[in-house]
Amino acid sequence: MTKEWFSEWFGSPYYPILYGNRDETEAQRFIEHVATHLQLPPQAKVLDLACGRGRHALALYYLGFEVRGWDISVESISDAQKFANLHLQFDVLDMRNAFPENNFDAIFNLFTSFGYFESLAENQLVLNNISNALAKEGKWVLDFLNPHYVRKMLKPFEIKTLQNVDFHISKSIENGFVHKNIHIVDGDSTFDFAEKVQLIEKEAFEDMFRCANLQVLEIWGEYDGTPFDAENSSRLIFMGEKYK
Image 1 (spheres, rainbow, N blue to C red):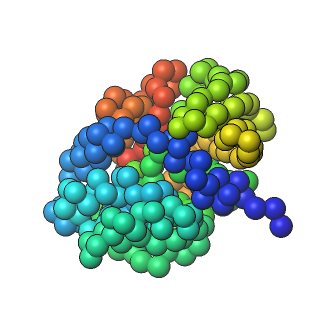
Image 2 (image 1 turned 45 degrees about the vertical axis):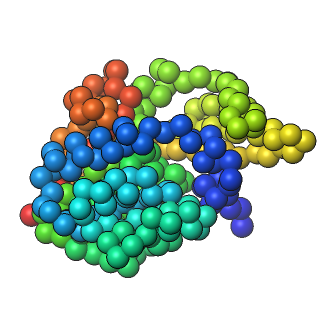
């Protein structure tokens, strides 16, 4: 059976090198902005779903919340464990599977951690799991790319050199997915990885949310809270709550 792309790439030592320039201050500021906007209560129980190495989970913990961080990558969770304590806990989880805990006051799915699967049915399963794990009137945030912006700004090829490693990155759009092929040159060694994310339109998301009993309250187009604009926004950030 062929491994799904994220099972190999997220566990690679080259993944944090390529994406190591993410702004920690921006992440903290975004989390603070969202938490205030959602009016989460002190010591709320929150979940960072597809938490990676714990960047956003840690930001949530610093705000005083009871935090769980779950991710499919064993390597990412192993790395995140260095932050773990009684109120910040990490576990390996495929988000298509039933969640081991529920009754969350809020669930966050951030930085395009959605649309990785081959079918909309699998994506729907994730949203159903989120809904089932939320407390009554629990809040949720899903941060995705804006498909229109991706199509408009797609750069077919680029080379990045980071920590003496060359990343040859090619991108294309095929059959409703944006594909990123990553050829890595590290000294005399070469490696190849891929990313594949379904370009899910705003209207398709809204249909899936309704099926999962998730109500959309607001949509941002940038991390600073700018309202979503279909033509110009780089992000598609949904915020809502579970239907009463």
